[in-house]
Length: 223
Image 1 (tube, rainbow, N blue to C red):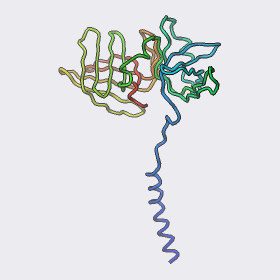
Image 2: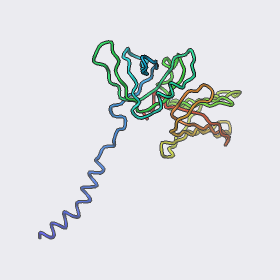
Image 3: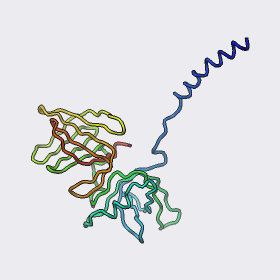
Image 4: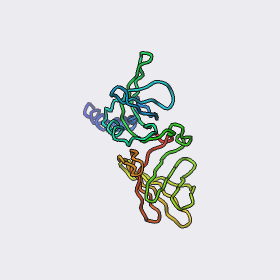
C-alpha cells in the first residue's frame, strides 16, 4: 500500500506543478513606474525635468543609460523648449521648494518644442511615425489610421495590427488599390530633419515602396 501511495503522489506532482505554473501572475515591468511628459532645463550642472502638469521638479538620474542626458546636451540649440517623454521612478521631494528625483528607465521622445505639452491628440494616439524626403506622417489610434504625405491628399483608414516578435509589429490597410503598411521596431532613432530622438524605428511601405523614419508610442499605449 505504501508503494502504491508513493506512486500516486509522484504521478500527481506534474499536475500540481502545472497548476502552480498556470496560476502564476505575469511580471509587470512597469510596476512602480510612471510615464510623464514635460520640459528639461539645465540648473546648476544638473538636468531637471518639469512635468507638463504640476509644479514639482525632478533631477534626472539616468540609471538605465537611456542616453537622455547626452542627447539633451547634443540637441541643436533653438528658441523652443526641450521637451521629453519619459518613463521612470518619480520620487517627490519631502522638503517644500526643493527638487525631487526621477530615475529614468525609458526615453520615448526628446525634441525641441514649445507646444508638445499642449498636444490635444496625444492621449488618443497609439503610435505616431514620420519621415522625410518626401515628408510623411502616420497617426494611429482607436478611430483609425491617418496618413499624410507631401504632395498627396491625406488618407483616414481603418487598419489591423500584427505582432512580429521582439517588440516589432506592423499596421496595415488598403485604399484605392494601394497596400499601406507601417513597420515598427524598438530602436533609438534620430529624425534627420529636426534632430529629435525617438524610441522606435519606422518604415512606411506603400505598394512595396519604402520610406524610413522614426516613431513613438502615444498616450493610449502602455508599452
